[in-house]
Picture 1 (tube, rainbow, N blue to C red):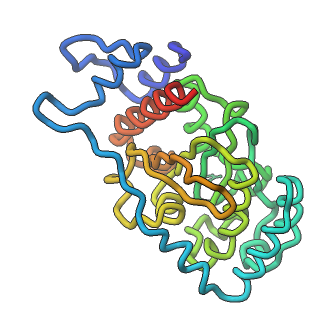
Picture 2 (cartoon, rainbow, N blue to C red):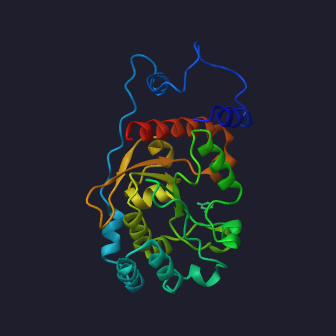
Length: 265
Ligand code: URA
């Protein structure tokens, strides 16, 4: 872990005071894990159980655009083919208003894949996910636990910018989901990070609020992969920009991610 990056992030987030009786050595796995446990007498945060894959069930009874997306995505044998297939897909109305397809950034072989919601204006302009303000915050958070884009792959639920930065609709998400599933299947990451409520709900089927599922490992099942992938829901960095008080939780989630990556090496 880069101690300077971690310290810089804490100072930037306003952590200028030590609140615990004793310092926690964040580089010591057991010490850091203990610090994340509840007070004595409490029970550890339970692992979230994967919910019924309602999203998959919905996709099975899907309209024509979704079925076409499923066929086209399934035919892609590589990530390059998948990107080309998406570039030629006209079944999602978002493609008509976007400037660029925003497919992915980072290293497809890294074993860690992050999934956000959808591109904003900066991403649309540059054709790359998470390059605007929330992406820059995300980069700083990742750097604080020794991660950068060479060590992860990052993409979104929808690869085109929803006009005016509105949320993607359920129908847009469902139409793009076969491409995202294929993206995950082809990259075959060992761990997923789900950024925000929409990515979490779509990929896990869980309907609880992001604040109650964040920081608890769950699983995501993806067509074409033999086993479900461990997935960590986190608060979306755009939410953190609006709600600085939530950064404490985001920091705990980053530590949980780092601990799991180290433990699963
Ligand atoms: N927010 C997202 O969810 N994705 C991006 O690519 C940028 C901002």
